[in-house]
Length: 581
Image (cartoon, rainbow, N blue to C red):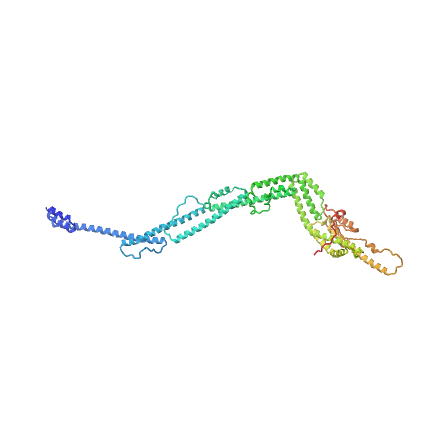
């Protein structure tokens, strides 16, 4: 019964006091001593203290863990705000009162939102940096799988993001410029290849495979290496175009010269119009596709070679044509050459074969150039010689006119003769100054060239000196005539003692006429033969106004005086000469 009663309290609410009472009862039944009972009670107290102590230690650790978590949360919050470049955040509580768990609960939503914002910001940074890395790789010419760029989580601010965006825009602009430059280079290569007759795709694919037309615009290479190789290709093609154009123009020049030499008909020339149109074109002006293709240059070269061979067979005809041109130049310049000897020499050179046809023609071309230079140097003097001769012809006409006793009669055309006589007197008065000028210029020319200046084989200074002497003689004759006339007038005043006087000496003397030189250096009247013979026989000597002879260089052997009959064909028709300033 006692055991049953002892167990009843266990079925109710168990407390420390009930347990101690039950323990007292058990000790009483057992008969434990007080010492044992005290010992066991002390042991119970110690065990209770240990339990409390463990609980307290656990509580302290839990509190410390919560405090650390709260501190970490605040540090994380600060780091997130710093990384995102935010100075403050709306969801962060300003007060730090309340329990630790309450403070953690207040910070948690802000942390969650900042973490989400950080993830979104990192994605933006990753996208921008990936584009930057891609464009930089395109510029550097790096191909292959690209790794994702590393994002600096310590700085995710909008300022940094804007910097990356600005860098990306600059790179995109540079990419656009490079792409535009690449397309310009490709277009230039296309045009140059078309003119040169080259394969465009083969040229550009050698630079980079992405430059062909099948590739999209955005996929074309814009690297530094591609731009450099494109620039080299364009430069090389331009130089090739320049050299081809130079060669073609040289061939075309030869072709045209050969055509002109052999009088090639227009029908044959039309076949090479596509070539001759570029004879004077600049490099930039040649844009027709195939204009400088190797086939075109080879065809032109073959045609030039064919005409060269044909020219060799027609060398005599061509050489004589050039000789005729040379003779015409000398004829206009009033320089006499031995044409028969020159033509005989040309035939001998061609028949002997000692001189290449090209060299012979080149030598004749040089002779033509020198002849033109000599003719140009003589032009000023020759112009004045023509004026002098025309003035002398007017002087001769005036002499005839003055001897005409019926010149003032009212006949038909008399007024025209009067006008011509007035102009003739003006020119006659200019003759002395014109002769002096001719003498001075001729002497200067002879000093500069070291040879005698001849006019149709006659030394010009001899002609001028002879004319001055004859003019002096004529003036003396006029003076004698005037004196004779005065004497006759005095005789007529005296009574005539004899019917039928003798003829007047004045009329006899007036029949003598002296005029200036003609085209061959001769003069009219009794002195024409004297002038030409003196000038020819005394080629190295001329006559001064004082009657003395000068020592001058002899004329070339092939310079001979023209006959009087030949000279007549060169004398220009008598007409008034306009006055010179």
